[in-house]
Length: 208
Image 1 (tube, one colour):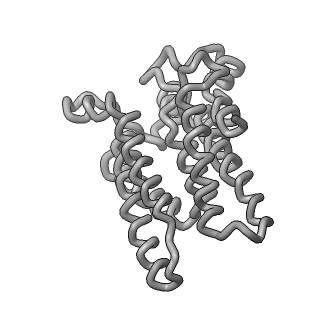
Image 2 (cartoon, one colour):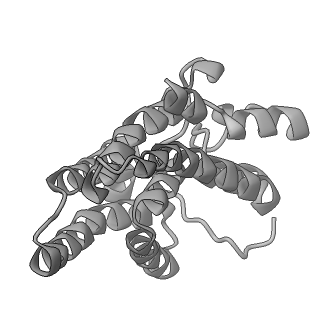
Image 3 (cartoon, rainbow, N blue to C red):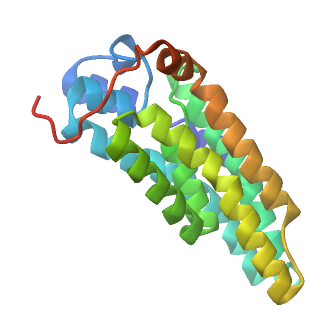
């Protein structure tokens, strides 16, 4: 419940209404997320939205890390407990109770959650996102590519961890596949526009 309520904080909606007098869900891609804020209102509006949405995911899984003080809980189960917090915080972002259940796509919140679970994997996915975005300028395509790379990275590191320590988290592998599937599902409209050649490009450095 706490994770869902954290995810339900509609940063894009509140910042758009309070500081700019608009509901960002009525403009651009009609999505309450950092990317649409960037397109509609610029970097100054998008940056705090990204930071808040990132922290929602990070805080939700970090709270579960408090269980590490229980000596009976293994490190693998700490990861499993963190994973349990991801679904409600992301669902809260996509379907926020504080904004009529019309939220964002969950990318920023997922990044925050993954950072809280395995920071090095989050950095690797971010590297994929940056590379794809630089060459295509499609935020949606970069997000889907990074999401699909996630289970590959998780599988590689899980295999290495099993070889070294004889232990791994099957739950984490399943979770990574679910993340990739979720990102494809939430970007299904973008995927259709990409196929049709009508998806909007984003230029972070472009003057507005």
